[in-house]
Image (cartoon, rainbow, N blue to C red; front, side):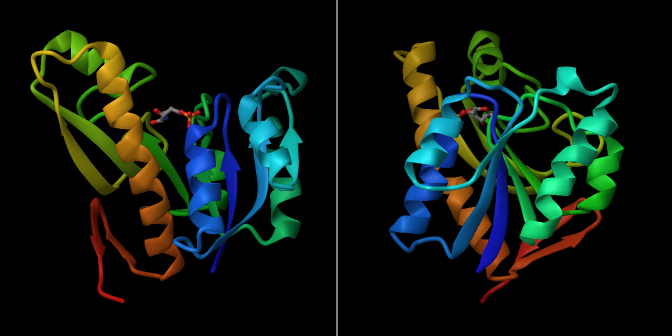
Length: 202
Ligand code: GRF
């Protein structure tokens, strides 16, 4: 069992996939809190529907990124949060929080990193015309989408794919892969050696 905090800024379909995996006992985790920097994030509604505590703190109310994160961490620490799961969290984390949770923050990105980092991974890959794209789950370091890669899955872009059909394919994989990686974390099966991450047998 791993105690997690999920950070989300928007729709929260990955949060929903994590909740569903926990409820169907495929994932041995407990969501201690769902945090959002956006008041209107649908992710917060999803959490409330499942009686998961929520926290909303706008970054605008703090003088710096660090102050914002300090306040978030004040809420996380007493809850015994072991892993921070970014699920559509649209802010770049500062070295402060990364230092406080070293190799304990993960992110999901809708492309095969290091290709197409940033906010529009699906569209950027589609517009570029690559034949294969995919999903990456990685540890968060101080760069943008640069941390050690834990898992990747490939999606083929067919001639008849549109951006919309590609988005559906990508999200379907995300919703399966992210709970899987959290389960590996929960089972203490993730080994990190520099940039190389291995998943060891249970
Ligand atoms: C996902 O595509 C994820 O890869 C990216 O942001 C999106 C979040 O979607 N980081 P949702 O809010 O989980 O529906």
